[in-house]
Image 1 (tube, rainbow, N blue to C red):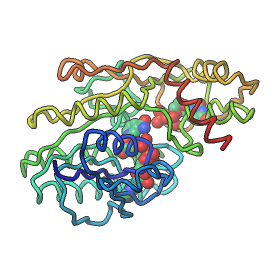
Image 2: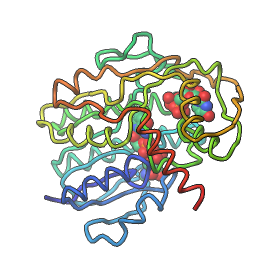
Image 3: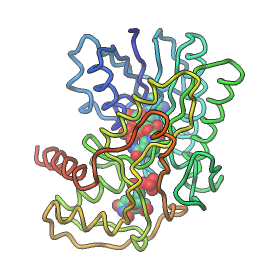
Length: 312
Ligand code: NAD
Ligand code: UDP
């Protein structure tokens, strides 16, 4: 039971993964440069002897001894990954090279947090893993989309060329407690706006579709995938196939918060995907994973958490 490295461990998903690994009896080395991560996400772990925090940017090589690697380091919200697109590309590509090099030297498994964004603005629906995607290589989302696509390439080439034990996880929109209130993603924006009585910012018509997965389901899927046999590399989709327009999401949140906030329509950002929904049959058939938390229950938990944070 050697130490497990979680890069991006102080972020939204990373901090939940650190909790889950510690609960399983592992010790965890959390590496983060705090670009979007928050100390408050891991504050409760700082006194735990099985938890170690290292401030480090994965763009630079890392020399540590660990038994397994989860690579989550990368800003995930469009406003944050577009703030410094060159750094986002470096984090995805050079970060992947550094961590794959580490996995190769140590001979340990490595899991990549890839994304549904590798499908771009998809032309088939729902998206299954065999679909190659429809991605603009030079637009404002490209630093993230193409960075993550190149990272997938690197994972598979290190696997083929150097026999590195890889797992590539394509994560669809995930939400829950510990999202940064200033994160800019739709669930956190709408909840914070509803709680503060501010206008709910709908981009475009609000008819665009997303599928939202609750964080506990996602982390359970990540662990199930990581436990699967070494020859099972993926890529595997993880998400909740329940579809929801942004207008419907706004209505649900306004009702849950009991808020009188009005809707405010804004321009749709360039290359914003029209519709996105995972085909999760591979995860289901391979290790029986499927989400358990429905949108209403997940939003209730998330609203309760944001209420606590905002009122604190
Ligand atoms: P997040 O922004 O909350 O967490 C990312 C973490 O990575 C932060 O703690 C940040 O400080 C850290 N980080 C960024 N650049 C770094 C660098 N160069 N070196 C070290 N640390 C760095 O985002 P999240 O939602 O927790 O996403 C985690 C991972 O999952 C990301 O790789 C993201 O692309 C992927 N993902 C998330 C979602 C989602 O809906 N949450 C969907 C698809 C993919
Ligand atoms: N969105 C919105 N209002 C907001 C934030 C986002 O209408 O305040 C829309 C955004 O245009 C997109 C969807 O919500 O169509 C999901 O956006 P998010 O940034 O959460 O993730 P994406 O799926 O685009 O990566």
